[in-house]
Length: 178
Image (cartoon, rainbow, N blue to C red):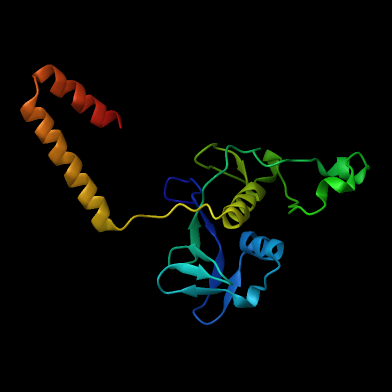
């Protein structure tokens, strides 16, 4: 989790600099694509590289997760329904299936941007989904952050100097609200 306790990143790869091992979410995506785990590497420029794809990561192999929605977004089926034959096996054919605990008493819950109680298995599912769909959140370069900040400050100053005080106040409220 981040400093505020919210899980925004998922570990895609574990690496000691020589050997890179895919974590569960990446391993699931590789299996679904029919690709080998031996072909992956963690590059110094912040990418996990594979056979025809790159995953943007930090230098530790963590990916910023693009959550598909709140906890429960992915289909959940109680394990006992499967064991008791209430769910047809065809439902699982050609799909990635994760088995994990979702009961709150088992303590495998984390705070996410959507919910204070996001099941740990759903975090793994989110990482696999991000990789398979190619949906990633990428961090902009600090220089771009500064450029956009200064541009907005300049525009706000120009608005304040060229319009009436009432409109300037409304524009300032609009910028603060954005």
